[in-house]
Image (cartoon, rainbow, N blue to C red; front, top):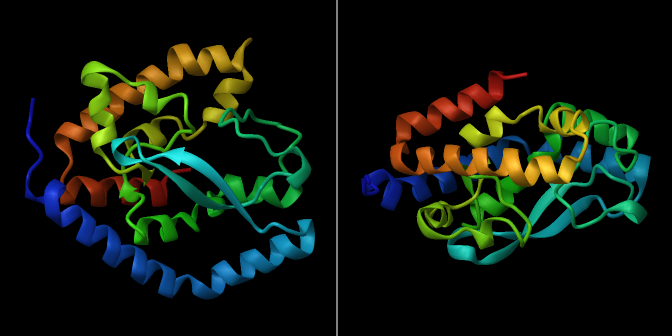
Length: 202
């Protein structure tokens, strides 16, 4: 089992903080425009806040642009393609991953990282045991190997006879495997690679 190197122990947080601060400064006007568009099209709330499991199992509230009708939002992370809860504008935001941008505030606060496991609601990551629990040593990330591997997760779940069961028995275990791989191979160059793959992936 590889021990975390200097970057994982010290450099990663500095990289996250610096990149998130620069990103928010550069994207301030586009973020404001998106917030205004959501407000005009779908009303309030503009942001979606939900409790997620963070590093060492600590809970935090994730911040995303709201993409579902406010009266039909639930605490489930299971969303399938064609979900009727998703608004017209929300479909566009999800397609281009624009709803994820406010998570830069979570990164700035130290609750998330740019690269790492996607943060789950209580009932998934916090139930990991044994070697799998090493995933919780990582800050949750906006992107990462598991996120990219399942970037079409909504379409995948839509084809399953029982989306929740398929997620629990197939998708989630594979995400754990990929996240453990990332845990043992993380580095500055690798993080840059995952970020670039995210930017240029479809």
